[in-house]
Amino acid sequence: MKRWIFLLAAVLTAVLALSAYVWRIDILRTGLDPKQPFQIYSPPAAPDYSRPDAWALLPPHPETGTAVDPPADIFFLGPTAYNGGAHWNAPIDDRKVDRQFRQVFAPNYAGPFQRTGRLFAPRYRQASLYTLMTLREDAREARRFAYADVAEAFRRYIAAYNSGRPFIVVGVEQGGTLAARLLAEEIAAKPEIKARLAGAYLIETATPADAPPITPCLRRQEAGCLAAWVSAYSDDPQRAKDAVDRALVWGDGAQLENLHGRLPLCFNPLIGGTTTALAPAKLGLGAANATGLEWGARPPFLTRQVQAQCKDGVLRISRPKASMLKRQGDWMDRQKAPGFNLFYADLEEDSKARVAALLAAPSKVTPHP
Image 1 (cartoon, rainbow, N blue to C red):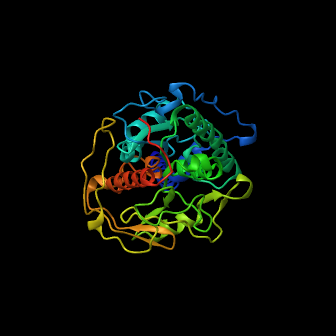
Image 2 (image 1 turned 45 degrees about the horizontal axis):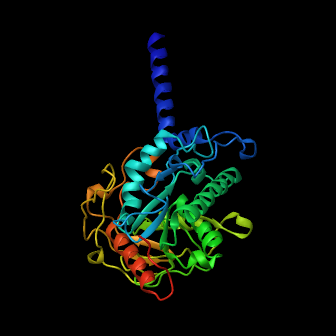
Image 3 (image 1 turned 30 degrees about the vertical axis):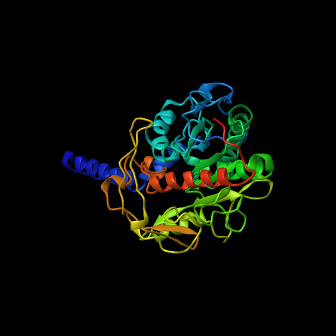
């Protein structure tokens, strides 16, 4: 009898272990659910953008600048770093969020622009990673909620820090979606501000090709235009399909909705324009893994890593050759923006070219020290 009891217990343990393994993703996802409707949710306190601690990146002299500063400014909105669980939207003083931003996202995605302009990155109550895994209305509400912080931060930047300088808007994933609305409502609708826009980069962000917030970039020596793309590896057709089918974009009434059969805008960083031409790997100026580097350090570049081509609205890229350009971390980390940038050096040169084009245009902007 004891032998049978032991055997039964072993079988039950094996079944439970197997079930936990099979359903592990659902279990992890469920653990990230705040488990309360957004309508009765009490969000974290709002940031005060007149305070330096409300900014993840802020120049030493944001109001005036210095003679050694680059000629432009960069308004940067990072990707989701908050997993979820307790909140729909992250507190701006969450230490894990700040650590991941500083160690992973800032070096890899803000880093390519630090030689183009002074960097301004607001801390905002970003929607959690969980909101990107579900199409529930609560999740959409949380993502819409985050925009109020972004708009307030941008207004503060323009009023207190810009001083008439050329500027670039950069947004990554969720930050890119918020930046798309910012372009439409705070920039495109205000000619005196739009005249100073050197360019906008919506990285891994679906933007309707038939209704972009500003004119898409067709070539590298062009200012005031939009470079937006979502990518998938060439050997992963499901990811390419999901990038289109599950994307949420801004619709009428500032509502987040599906593309409904429309294609996203596709910019190819290796070419510097919106084109369907194949860009061979030899065109790449350098990929980089800057994770963990001290802020301001220039990472070593890896050349000839990927080829890229826009196909059906998605940037299809080949698998990189270097092992350091592969996703790492736990399951939740692998759902976020990767800890490397396949187009690091390309974006660096592209952004410099667009600032130069804006400064060279007659009656556009006057560079400030």
